[in-house]
Amino acid sequence: MPYDVEAEFERLKAEVEALEAVHPNRVVQVLVGPSSVGVSSGNRAALQGQCCAA
Image (cartoon, rainbow, N blue to C red; front, side, top):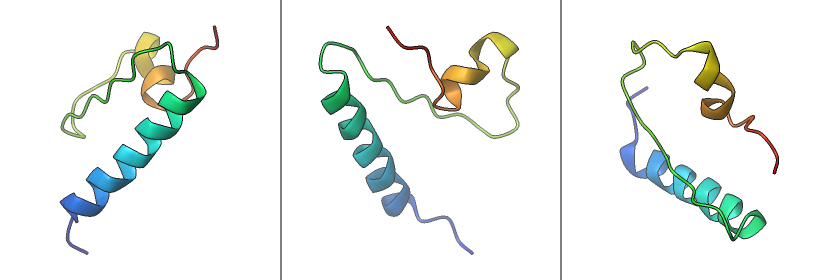
């Protein structure tokens, strides 16, 4: 199945808007990189959407 860039953008946009609504005083960043890039264990939870609560 081909990669649908527009659908992925809309999905990410909706997720960011939902996070902004829940955490209005926080900055929401989306970091996108090639899937072959390794992730250190210290950053893995944040990248998987399991980030810490304030």
